Length: 454
Image (cartoon, rainbow, N blue to C red; front, side, top):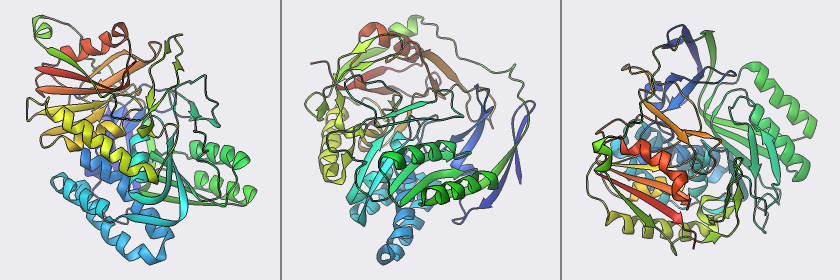
């Protein structure tokens, strides 16, 4: 058992039950206290590319690890090769300097599956993780991710709650070729499984509408206790199905106390002369990505008429589109490389829009760190061992009734920023976010919009 003193008054005891690959825990996650009555702490992933900056290839490999575990579990003929590649991937997760080489090696292998798979990533944290699981497969896979967004012109085919989250409602939209049809296995991807309730909720909803025999729950970390795992068995018996669980690390956690967060901080947003010296440029990637021309409606009543891009998987994509998506990402990266002014660059995804920016960041060259804005409210404490040492909040450009956060970006840490938006938004809605980044000492801020308003 290992005890993490997260904050004054709050300890989390972690007992590892299974670590079959011998992964060093400190390479996978750190801990932080979060603002949530249902759960007072957060495992802050060092490989996910969400809350803290990472080498983008490391994040892509975290999904590849889960893909290879699925292949090893399902494809006897490819089990040995998948296991070999998996060892390389897991080594690179702890040695980021080798991540690009290993990622290229995995992608050259052109992995396929005999039985089609449908992969679902959970919003917002696991949209990129789920997509990176999907993208390893050269054939036979479909991907879509759940979303918090409301799209009046589409009917959500799945609706379920994430019970421990601060933002519980999930929707799931699909295109005309419903990617949930068929009887192949469905793979549910999340960065972390705590109780498994979310996964069981969606399996129950899927099975009522699109029944099949096999489901996978794939995660980087699995903290379910025996009682939670028994619920999986009960659901298997009730529905007559098989549910396979895969994770890099399996353990249990015990929480002691509650945090005293009197020393928590939030960086002030004070625009001074330095802010006015930051150059801001808007770069529109029009005509690079295929679009889905639908509008969204936010809780604050704003209707955004800008299209979405198909490459995210929000409406479903298949392996047949993999090369097309790769080409679009490389074209976007080629355009953005012309705008780089520094070897010290931060690329930021926004909210659910994580995978495409992550791939572009990986293609921009050396000296690039990647992570994303988030809906997760986490306490920042400026101590060396604590995961989240600085943080800012601002109203989301997509929905001003929702607060967004950015963590671990300090003044002068980077020289330039590429801030990625999937869709165009009106200037007044993006200004609060830009005000935050104006205080960070960037010489250049590039606001990259994948889909303009036409």
